[in-house]
Image 1 (spheres, one colour):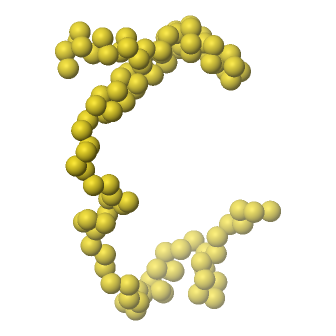
Image 2 (spheres, helix red, strand yellow):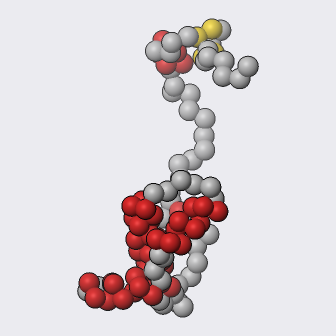
Length: 107
């Protein structure tokens, strides 16, 4: 996309610095002028990208519920008895009666 086309698209969906400051005030956020200008530029670029994506023809594209449906090979769900518990627990900081001991996190 040329710089002129990009600028024209940004202007169509541009968010102003003033709008950013108004929303920040409503949300009780302290944003300075320079940050508001940066946010306005970033949000305008995001909106421009959304406009570009909205223009993509998806008429003949079938939706997927999960991207892995088409390509994910899963291993068999079988018990693995080759794990050496004693070896693994020898590396653990604390073990008692075959169990890993972890610090208490809830009081």
